[in-house]
Image 1 (cartoon, rainbow, N blue to C red):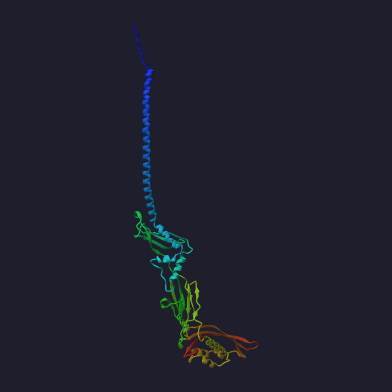
Image 2 (cartoon, one colour):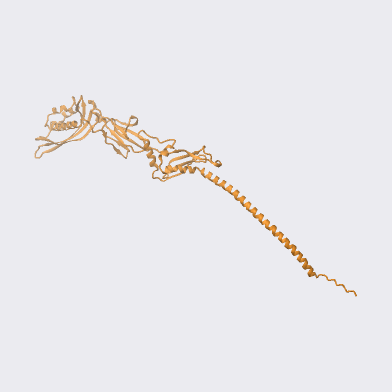
Length: 396
């Protein structure tokens, strides 16, 4: 009897487990292979990112350097930077620099010098609040600035392109073109003096080109001297302008003697009067006092009229007038006469040959019951006639 053959077939579970084991091994192999490729991919990606980053940084560095150079060149091309440097010379009162860079300098008159003008320019900015702004004429091709001191425009600064310096990217280079500092003179002087005087401004004599007005002499005074060859000068006015400082005004008379000068602020006028200087002044004053004493005594009939003759020229109208005075015939009787308080009130020297003297004396007469004092004042015009001084006229 044959033994029966039993065929054992694997269970579905076992078969499935075998299949799963095979798939698991394949899966493991695939996973190992995927990880390998992933690592390679990550490594490549990192390298790529590093390369890209380096490239970006390299390009950024180049671009940033370009921007820096561009900005630096642009900023350096600003005309304001040049103006800032120039402006420091205003702030430090560097008049030498300003003067050297002015195409036109302020006018300097013959009565002042360059030093006075420079000092005046300094006074316009010293101690002031200085600022500068773009002027109304400012353009990108023509930078121009106005400089102000305490809000008042005192000058302008103009720049121009410096063609000798080539700046990167074609930006311009600026340089100083001109400084304008129009310091205007506002001072002057008008001086009224006798026509035969000499006027000096800051020590410089004025000639007739500065003569602005002429005033003839008083006709009432001329009548006392002209018939005997005497003369009286009129007055005239000299005027000077264009000065930076109030001038020193001096005046000399006909003989070169310095005269007192007065200033009238209401009329802005300097003036000097006729001279009181004369080489014969002492003699002429004594002459006038002696005549006044004698005249008083003639009037009071204490001296004879003829005693006056030596004081007058021949055919004198003044002496003739005295001789016809009724006072010579009618005067109160009195005793002894003495003179006191004799002095000169005024002395004017018109020129070498004509003077005016005002003399005063007091005549004391013995009268009853008390002495009486009679003052006498004479106004004498004295003229040198043929080398001798005579009374050419008397003003009453």
